[in-house]
Length: 178
Figure 1 (cartoon, one colour):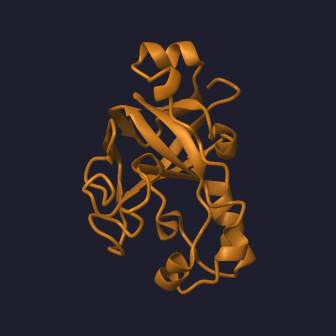
Figure 2 (tube, rainbow, N blue to C red):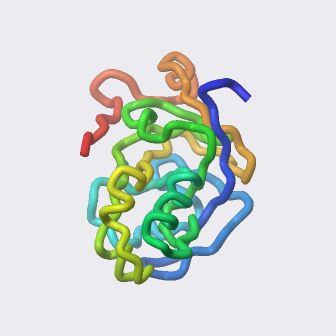
Figure 3 (tube, rainbow, N blue to C red):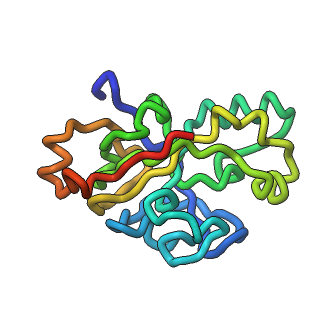
């Protein structure tokens, strides 16, 4: 594995807002929508009114979930965080404003994904403070493709992203720094 790469360890989807998350071993990333079968790709989800590029896919680090669980003295699991893709071995916040591959899909890091009180209501755990800098990131799917547990997660240079169909110039996504 390249030194700046990580991997997918779990994937989670929900068909509708506030519906329980279900673990999947593989999924298709769909350009411009998100993950096939997930609430946001289907046009739903609690935050569906926010800009499309900011809600297509969420990623979180497995070690961050474990740290939040320890800090909150809870049994928080990656699926409880309502993030889609759980990774290991890669600095997710460093991907905000960058092109990256997850499996065969090309994504763009749109913003950090801080927790909200909605997540606290669903989990019953006081997460906002503990997850403030460990909530993962939101990403847009630029070029679709299959993703499976074990898939490589790696940043890609602009040239590779453009060859894969990434927009350039004024059409290039603009990350939101929060």
